[in-house]
Length: 147
Image 1: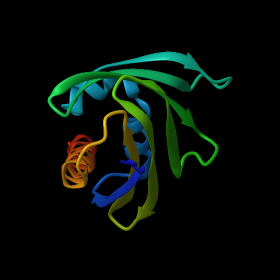
Image 2: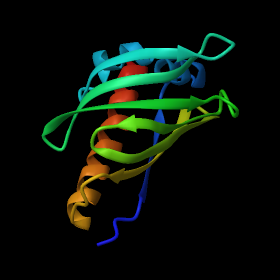
Image 3: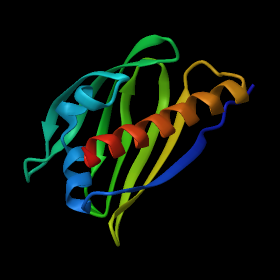
């Protein structure tokens, strides 16, 4: 059975300036304070401007603990932050991005995610897990930015 990478996306309006949203998203080490599935986030390397380049995470996913490392791409910063998986224990791919657009009364945030797991899951289980990740991530970001 071939398990293709699935892309999922979610968007929301956050009643906070774009700079606040970007600042929260870039403060990786504080993710455990507001992203409930993230148990630990450690910056492993920085780029030549001092920005986190590789971040190692410990998180709960699909009812178990998982570890993975993401590498971030700032080439479209600050309107977009993208990432890709460097290594992970249950994922073969984890690519995504946050895109930010300043709008009246706040920021429109678009969150996209591609996940490919090592162990193939039935499509409906995978889609439900992705939807939960996306909805929770954007809801938690919104709550943090608006608080």
